[in-house]
Image 1: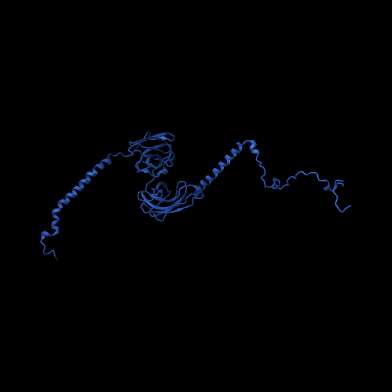
Image 2: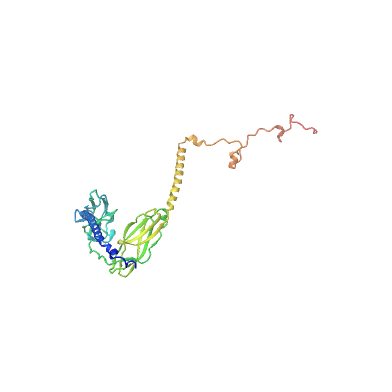
Length: 362
């Protein structure tokens, strides 16, 4: 080999020793820079206030007003205020928004300092208490906060046991079943039923799972809606899930329907919606019928405004070469006035001296 005659000082291993202190210095400098960059970020995160909710009273009856205030929210952010049952601070809304009095919710926008104050009516949620006043952001990054609240006179029940070991997975492909009907041709909201089979791969049963159904048009982000499925899926078992899906009125084009459980998207299904040609036909007919109706109304107004003499005098003199009105109507035309016959053409008249005679007769 060519390296046998080379001196030991020329080997590559001996050349790397003088560079080790420089490499160590580079590593230490990199760590120091990372620390200097992370410390201000950690301080800013610790100094940033967390969303908070405060109530004017811990308990109130149905029909009363409750003042809700909060601080630490993002400036100029739209929030939704709801009274939800089967919930507790720190555990969230167990049944999703289906456990809230959605019809009596209120919306509020935070100020420049991230604070808000809003009055809302006290309503009974569809599920028993313990209850909370649930505040969540509507747009932007998701942020929520809950405050314990007692609805006076509303029934109470223990919180349902949440399964921490349950894990759902889709076992079959999703399908969109059903037909929207003829009204979709005229702009009614298209609707379908999303069907899929899930299996519990965890060690605990899943009770009344809450799925999120998202509908997206083209390249836009999906709009999520929570839907709860009633039932229990034991470990190692499977169940068929059927959830309704509905699009906005007059929707058409390429849509996609997604189903999500927790933070994991389980499946996605494309949905092609035809154009509602009935709406186009309606506008075309409207563009034809309305001008015709306006023309008829205008002609009727002009006819009413015309003088009576001009309305009744509509006869015109007959033109030369045209048939008589009687011939057109199928009746005989009036005969012209006759003159008296000449004496010599009248068969009943006697011969007179003025009557001419024919030659050759006596």
